[in-house]
Image 1 (spheres, rainbow, N blue to C red):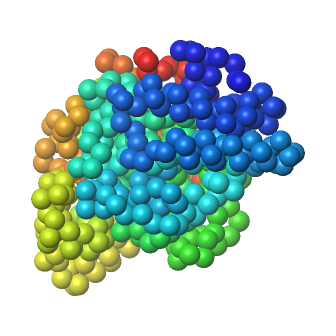
Image 2 (tube, rainbow, N blue to C red):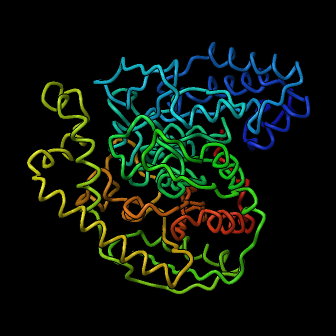
Length: 471
């Protein structure tokens, strides 16, 4: 077994590389790792509520097969024996795909999504399905099906959403990485509120199949406690798949090699508001203190107050049109079973004309071109990841942002689902209550390597890298 760590749990707060090395070096079998992680789940998940679906017997069966293969001398792959969860918007054999919804409680798809196929092929153990807000439609961590998921830093607070269970699982040290989805910030939002690395590659870098309700916005990616772990997972799950018509056909970047490089002289634009956001003073103070770490990494930083006008109406039309189409029957026949915040967001969609919709589509093209021109001058755009730190569970929007809906209060993330650019949230520090504050870094199109290089450098200068929630 691996060396014991805090609380007697041998896998708590280990990195991906730590756990894979334990297996490869013969210090632990995949079943040892799996059993330890399941013990940690049993100890902590009662207070966090990370899982929509978890079958311990299946987890141990997967690990047992890997034990047998290792005993025969087989190479298990780059994720040898690593338990990895996937969000309950992603299909995986043996698990319901319920989308956090009572209306889909018994939905079972006998199919592994490409990301799940690749995790299994790389030697990972599929741990289970993590919680999500209903159909990914809220930036907080509750749903009618699974109830409230809580933040390990303070269980009275939300971990954010919609990849809420994934973030809580990793922030609590149960696993080093989890797979989330991001259609308007749903990886970066919970990463910010729980102190994690939340990475979305360029649109189409990680294939999505079956087709999502928001096919032109969806990104799949990792949440992790370390940048290198995110890079390792991206090296496994990204790459072309013909089942996704948006999948990028071409060589994928060398994410891990990028983590070893240091690019001096990067031109960084820092915008505290993008021109319209309303961040709390403590958030901007902590983020701006974190900019010193970018300067230490050799970046040249300009402050740019106004980058573009708020594209929220473009995003809402695209996002809710897709979700609304998928939910049309449920809205007509089972509306009372749906989250009221979701039904409210969808109310105006069904009266939208084709002309209205395509006006927004063309506005999106214009917006993307404006952002492209901005990045002709800068390599990186840095912003707060969110305007706030974690707030109380049971709320759909944070105090002071009641004029926004259940996603649009996030301000900083959804623009880059419209453009498809790679972006990451990294932890910039902690507020006076000990709650994490995220910094968002956005790179040019297809420039994931620049993002991993800079994020790794930013992490290296983190004076509180090993800070953990109290357990």
